[in-house]
Image (cartoon, rainbow, N blue to C red):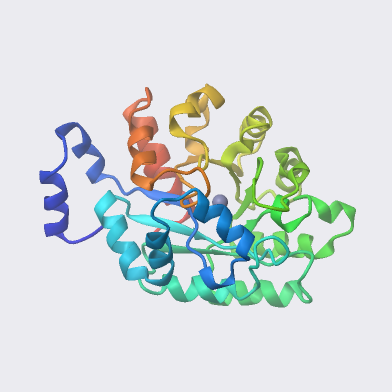
Length: 304
Ligand SMILES: [Zn+2]
């Protein structure tokens, strides 16, 4: 969190019922701070079209100091910065790993780097995974609709993917799998069905797997089943408007210990982080469940 002065300034401007949350150590497990220069024009345009304050997004992507000040202002302690290799759709090459590792050096306690090795493009999965570990990357992203493969494609002969999962498991690096649809130009949504993660959870039982977006909007039941079936599978609620979260996951309290707060900001259609946080806090859930989702689950995955 920020300085004591900043905190008391925030307190002064905040209604009393919100104060309980200032003692919380909130992690947003899904923020896209990415190298803007790498974006393909069509992908960048998809984001720009949906955001009023796109200049601020660009500024945060270039300056960890500005982004940390923003997190202070909205009461978020830590953010996991999602990056992944997706040259065909997004323009992201393997250099995203260096980018995010370097960016997070500004505050290694508060900024948590997420990178990736692309199973169809790597020439040396072992070497690339060693590199990931050396860079201090704390999560790997697999984005099936943007990387154009099924999350269990190692059963169909993609041995790189098997190496990636095995090495992630060995190093204790969790893997986030995008589940659900994507509207970016060229995304192939058949790959967004979470059911293929069932194989991964069975074959790599010590690997922590986060289901980003819980299969929204087509496959929420599948996601809920996987989280209940596998102790090593987690729900990242990012990309789901908090106001509709309990419609999609009416039994959310049952899986709270495996659920993390995330926003997917500044993805298309995602409001400001603070708005998402306020909407989540307003849900008819117990304080204990809210604390679990905002704070505790993330602290078990990325302890101090
Ligand atoms: Zn995302």
